[in-house]
Amino acid sequence: MKNMMEVKDLTFTYSGASEPSLKSISLPVEKNKVTALIGPSGCGKSTLLRGMNRIHDLYPGHRYEGAINLLNPDEKGYTNILDIKKEAELIRLRQRVGMIFQKPTPFPMTIFENIAYGLRLSGVKKRADLQEVVERSLRDAALWEEAKDRLDHDARGLSGGQQQRLCIARAIALKPEVILFDEPTSALDPISTLAIEEMISVLREQYSICIVTHNMQQAARISDYTGFMYLGEMIEYDQTDTIFMKPSQKQTEDYISGRFG
Amino acid sequence: MELLFKKIAQLSASLVFVILAATTVVLYLSAKPAIQEFGAGFFFESRWAVEEKVELSPAELSELELLEADKSTFISDDFIEDEDDFIMDDEDFITDDDMESDSNESRIVYGALVPIVGTIFSTLIAMLFSLPIAMGIAVFLSEIAPSALAKPVGVAIELLASIPSIIYGMWGLFYFGPFIADLFGGNTVSLLVAGLVLGIMVIPFMAALSRDAITTVPDMLKESAYAMGATKLEVIKDVVFPYAKSGIIGSIILSFGRALGETMAVAFVIGGVYQFAGKITDPTNSIPVVLANSFAESSGLSLSVLFYLALILFVLSFAVIAIAKLYFLRGK
Image (tube, rainbow over all chains, first blue to last red; front, top):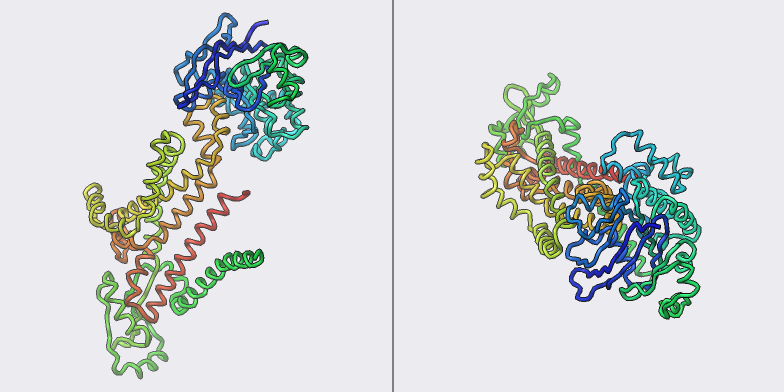
């Protein structure tokens, strides 16, 4: 199976910090698989994720070393996204590598416009095209039945779980190659969490997914591969079953069994 | 203790309504003679303190002739010099029965149209001028400037907002007015100068409040827009402004209210003449300026006229804020 993304020896230092927050991290994100990142708070898993679409670069002064390779659209060879300098290319990167955040972040506009927003940014103007994508994205995000009658309502009127599904619909409307989830269910109730998890396992058929989660059961339920991080280092990366059944590192085992973290 | 605290808080809150009601009642009662005298025509009358001859019926005439005897007559000759007028008006008006020898009664006419129009236009000019600049400052401080720059500039803006308005007035009269007159021609005191000085005055106010509103936009929301491939401009236009809309509109309403009632700064630079500004560079007048300039020399009906004018300003400010709140913030 091909790797969609490959993080190689990534060292990342926040602006003004003397110590790096990520130390020589390597991580593959396989195509059409779910890769989970687990670890205690402050271990750097979100920092790593935010490097993978270079959202860090919104704030100046952070330093990267190493490489994050993204499979080219023609599937021949990789491009190191850390080499990107131009704003326009960064924007293109973020459309190829979508991101879902800890809390639902509906834009202050209608449900329809929320989904259509990314397309409008990339220059799609025809109403019919937009309509088609909005419907398809909402169906993929299992939100169509609930939202179809109120597409012209403010998206902030949806419930928390619906808002998060809206954000996922918004991300997949752009047909990204990779979707990054940064603790997507940490602000949701158990039922909404379950809905998101089910959706992720369906989305896997079309997208490559990397998810950061605090919830180990969640990682065990939905991921194919799991990386355990601790204090800015990747302690262990393997198939999820292996990580949870017989991890090779003592630290991983301690964390999995709840002895710390 | 708990109860006492509750009571005190309650009292403070109800005080607002008491003050509001008391102000309205006092304004209305004091304005009543003028309201009865001029009625709604006050709004559409552009003359101020001008003598007008009134045709009277024969019955009234005969009655008045008896009173005519030793009344001194006065013809106001120059309505621009309103201060002089007012003193005379009192003599004229309190008795309300003096007349000229040709058996026509004359009365002094007051109309609010010039100051109303002057107030509205100077405020509109101020808003048109300050809105884009204040928004630019607010966006720059909250979204674009690095924090090392945003903090000191932010403090400077807040300091500017606290400068007493009379200082803006003096600056406007001695420096800014001549500068504008050089630039656009016309007078050194004019509707344009008043509007611009007002605008400059409310910029820091509006900018500081709008910046506060914009900084409430969650970083995560902005990041998710960037994560969709938005540029900075698109994030500001599509996410930041709509999200902070109610706060920004609030800052505009407050600034509008401030500009509407501003007295000292405008008094220096608007000219204080009772005529319409045919050109934007002509001098005219505004309600608070009329009030401030005339109170000292007024009594009786001419004082009541000022209260009528004050009531109009009061209702105008109230209406602007009420309409803006209802229109922009509905559904909140």
